[in-house]
Length: 126
Image 1 (cartoon, rainbow, N blue to C red):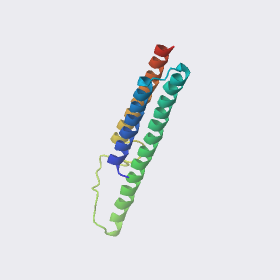
Image 2: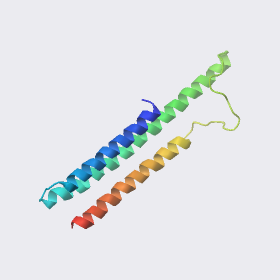
Image 3: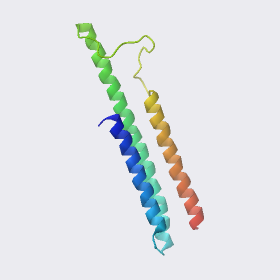
Image 4: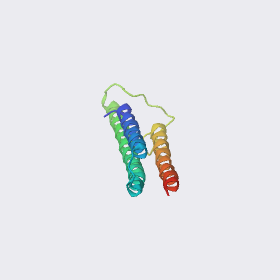
């Protein structure tokens, strides 16, 4: 699964949960306890999926970095360079890079968005 597919997975999952939340809020369910359950259930699934997908994507990026590091090690055996080496970064694939940091920030914003939605809807319903 490529990085583009991973980002699409996050967006698709979160979009589906937003649609589900809208469906439950617009439904004619008169049982308010069931609506309150969905007000907490759908955001909880959104929060868990955002955190889970963030970890998967960051781990995937770390494996890609390790793969590039292993290919760079082949240059010592006469294999032509595929990825150029720069002196700017001695070990560029340790921890989080720029893209992983951006994805982490996006998923944290999603988490806080779901918490805010659940809190506001709960206050509105009660």
